[in-house]
Image (cartoon, rainbow, N blue to C red; front, side, top):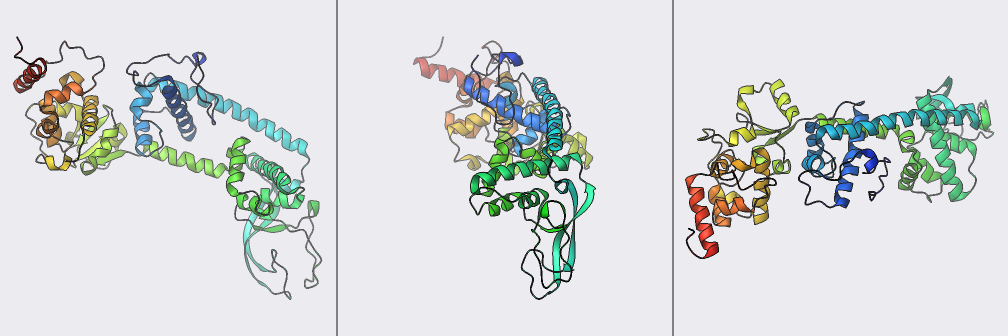
Length: 447
C-alpha cells in the first residue's frame, strides 16, 4: 500500500500495519491522497488533544468544537465518515495508540537527555535556580559611570539550589542548540554567553572596576553571580549571532532538531490549553449567523426554541441547561424538522435574504438538511419547517431557482438511498411536480 505524506509531528501514516481499512462508506469523492492527508492531519490533532487532556476520550462534540474554532483542516464529517476512520470510536483508538506510544517514547527520551547532561561535565551554574528581583545598585549591563546608583529591574540572582529535571532539560537543550547555531554562524562563542542564554540572564565576564570599592564576586567559569534578564531566548541568539540568525530561524532549528517542546515548554502548554478550551467550550450559534451552522453536517445539532440558538453537540446542550435554559425548550433539530404542522414559527419566510444564492449554495444547504434527518424523509414539509425556524430558504425560494422542489431533491446526493421507499414521505404536490418533470423530459405525458 502506498504510504502517505510524512507527518512532521508523528511517525504514523495510513498503512495496513495500523489496521487502517482500505475503504469506508461514503468516501467515493475522495482519492487516496486526500484521505491520507485527512488521516494524518486529524490523527495529529487527536494526539495533541489527548496530550492536552492527559488521555481523556475524545467525543464528536470535541471535534465539532475544534472545527468551529479552526483547529481542524477538515470537517468532522470528512474525518469520521469520508477518510480512513470508522467513526468516533475508531478515531479514539488511533489517537490513544499514538498517545501511549508518545508517552513511552517521551519517558525514554527524557532519561537519555538526563544521562547526557551528567556526562556533559558542563559547569554546575547552568543548572542552578535563578531568582529575579529588582535592586538598587550599580549598572550590570552598561559601563559604570562614577559609581552612580539607580534601580535595576529583573536582575537574576543565582542561588545554590539546583533546578528540577524539567528545567535542567530545557536549559541543556537551549545551551546545545545555541552553541550549534552560533558556532555555525560566527565561530566560537564564549561559554559564559552560552550559559547565560540558556539560563535566561545576561552573564557579564567580570572586569576590574575602579569606581567600585569591592570587585564583583566570581563564580564557576569566570561568570558573575547575577545577570540582567534577557528578553527571550530567540532574541538573544539573534543578538549573539550579530543578526545573522533570525528568531524564526531559531524556532525552525528547534523543530528540526526535535527540541521544540523542551526549549519552549510554556508555548507548548499554552497551545494545549487553547486546544482543550476550543474542544470543550460549547458551540452555540445564534440563528442570525445560521450560515455558520451549515459547515456542521452532523446529527448532533439541537435547537433552543426559546433563545433561538443552535447547539452543536451535547457539550453545548449541557452548557445552556447548566446556565438556566429550560430542557423542555431544547429539541433535536432533525426531529423538529419532521414534525407535521409545526407550530414554532420564528420568522416569516424572507426570500429576499437568499436572493444572491447560487445553485451551489442551495445544494450545500440541502446536503446539510440531509445530515439532520433520514434522507428518505426530505420533502416540502421539511423545507417549510426549516424556513420557519429561520434556517434557510423555503420551498418558494428553492422553486424559483430549480423550477420546483422535486428538481431540487433529485440533484441532492443521497448515498445508499434506493428508489424503493424514496417517495414515502412525499406530499401530493410533490408527485404532481415530479410527473410534470418526467413529462418535460420525455416530451409527452407519462403512461
